[in-house]
Each structure stands twice: as C-alpha cells, then as structure tokens.
Image (cartoon, rainbow, N blue to C red):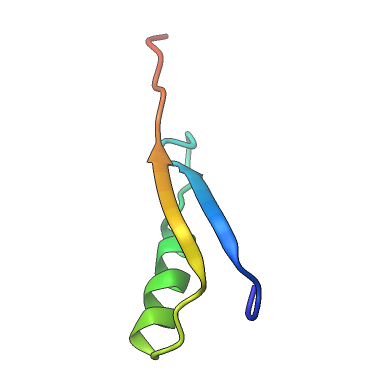
Length: 52
C-alpha cells in the first residue's frame, strides 16, 4: 500500500471465531511509529453482532 492513497478503510470489529483485525491495527501502528504512516483518509470500525 506504500505510495497509494486509501480514502476509506472499513474494518469489521467482530469477525467471529479466532479471526481478528489486530494484525491490521499492528501494521498501521508500526508504520506510524516508524514515521511512515500509510496514507489513509478515514478508518471506520463497524460491527453488527446479531443474537443467535
């Protein structure tokens, strides 16, 4: 994604099971910490947990 603009990044908080968005957060955090943040306009986190 280096050198590319992402206008919106949509992430689903509750993927279910062992699936998680933590690797994405870690990548974004590491890039920012290293002084090379990705060019993302907005990050949206959504979840629609429905009762079983």
